[in-house]
Each structure stands twice: as C-alpha cells, then as structure tokens.
Image 1 (cartoon, rainbow, N blue to C red):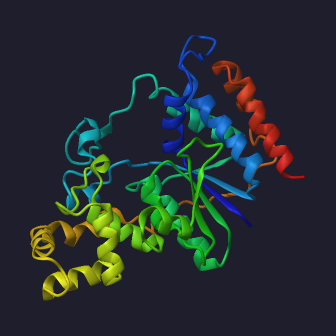
Image 2 (cartoon, rainbow, N blue to C red):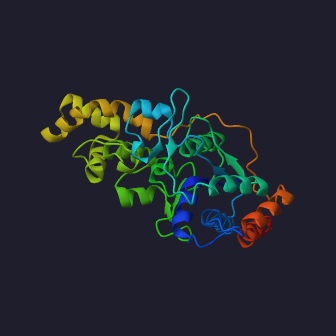
Image 3 (cartoon, rainbow, N blue to C red):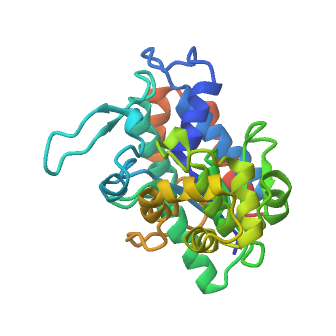
Amino acid sequence: MSLLLLDTASLYFRAFYGVPDSLRSPRGEPVNAIRGLLDTIAFLVTEHRPERLVACWDDDWRPQWRVDLIGSYKAHRVAVPDAGPGGTDVEEVPDLLSPQVPVIASVLEAIGIARIGSPGFEADDVIGTLVAREVAAGRRPTSIMTGDRDLFQLVDDDAGVRVLYPARGVRDPDVVDQARLAEKYGVPSGDAYADMAVLRGDPSDGLPGVVGIGEKTAAGLLARFGTLDGVLAARDSGFGLTPAQQRRLTEAAEYLTVAPTVVRVATDAPLPDFDDALPRAAAYPEALQLLTERWGLRSSVSRVLTALAASGG
C-alpha cells in the first residue's frame, strides 16, 4: 500500500516562485501557487501512482517548544511577533501568496485529498509521525515529496522510505535513498544525516551549528565516531579530536545539548483520524465546481481529477 507524503508548504512556495503570477482568477487575484500545486499533484499521482496520499500541513510553522530550546529558530522569518501568552508568530509570506493558502486548503478538501496538520507541530513532524507509523506497521514503500533537506533524516532503505527532492524541479527529482546520502553527503543513513545537520547547523532555520565544523568535517567526525553521541564522548574524553575540534565542540556544549531535539522531527505528533486513500473522484463535486469557477482553476483541477480517475485502473 504505497504512500506519498507531500510537504505541502514547501511545494506551494516552490510553485509560487516557479509559476508566473500573471496567472489570475476571473477577479484578477494571483492563483499561481494554487495552480502550480495542483499541477504538481496531478503529475505525482500520474508518475508515481501512490495508493495513498497525504498533504501534510504546517499547523504551527515555528513551534514554541523548539523556540524555547533555541531562541533563534526561524526567528529571521517572523513577520509579526506573537501578541503575548497564547499568541503565535506570523510567518513572513509574500503578499501575493498569503490569500492563496486558504484556497489551497479548500480545494484539497473538495477533491478529497487528506490534509493533515497537528497543533503545535510543523508539517515535518506530521511527516515524521506518519513515517513512524508506516514503519511500525511494516507498510512500504513511503515516498516524501519535499524541497526541505531536513527530511533526509527519514531516509531508510530497510523500511522503504525515500525522499523525492526537486533539485531540478518536481518532474525530475533526486531520489534520495541511503546510497544518495552516502554519495552526496558522506553519511550512511538518515539518522547520520540528522546528526550531521546538528553539527553543521542550518542558517535558513536559524540553527547556528558548531562554529568551524561544516558539512564535510561533520561527516568525517561521524565516519570516525559513528554517531553524534560518539563525537561528544570523544570530546569529553579528549580522544581522537584535534585541539581545535575539541575546543569548538566544548564551546558549543549548550547548543549540542538541545539541538538534536530541535533538528530531529517528532514521531509522536497527535493526529486526527483520517482516510488517506487516494480519491478516485471529487469528494465534494459541487463545492469543487464553485471553487473552480471562482478562482479560474478549470485546467488544473481537470488534470488532478483525470490523474485520480486513471490511478484506479
């Protein structure tokens, strides 16, 4: 029962920047992200023929529990700080994209594609939780479509988990398995990739990493000591590291205590009950027709429905 998980925000941001904003609704509003995402889904269903499909959603793009551990986490993306207790930071999103996001949610619902988020968790955590469930149940294969390298940590050949990474676009993605991780990053597994990401850091997420330890050095340390825990044991014992490496790892001790929790996706996010079966036809055809006409989505919606109908053959 093959499963395809979509990192939805990653894909609609990519569509927004990759599809001209001259694509407009009958009332003149931009619909490039909506149409680009729908066209992506149509292609993926046709090309990969999954039996199940989930559009994973950011209910919280910057969870407080991650910020509590590393205050700089995604701080540079905050457009409007929270309004106090119980408030939520607002992500900086292009003005022409923001109005398209709720339309995407409505169209996915009308088509019948499961759109799943979890309060207090990112889409990455939803994906991590669904992957953990698939692995525990022995179901395979699972493919993750994302433009976010963070999810490489879930790659697991034995469990049939791979990432489709659109380095050259969604129609010709890198298929990231353990061989690809070894070839490109010098790490043997998804777990090792996560350990490397902790050491390397990620400026795009506001994660400082260990000063002076980049990707290649991090991969070399993991090759020598096996895991992040092994690297830290070497730091504490003073065995096998250069003086500079030991000093840098020691100076980053506070960061290294909390970073693994921030970097690794959650695998236990609470999720609602849902049906991830690939729909063969629109779940709410009248609502979909209204949305199609209101937003001028006829060709893109038609492509999705055609792909879904053909997938049952």
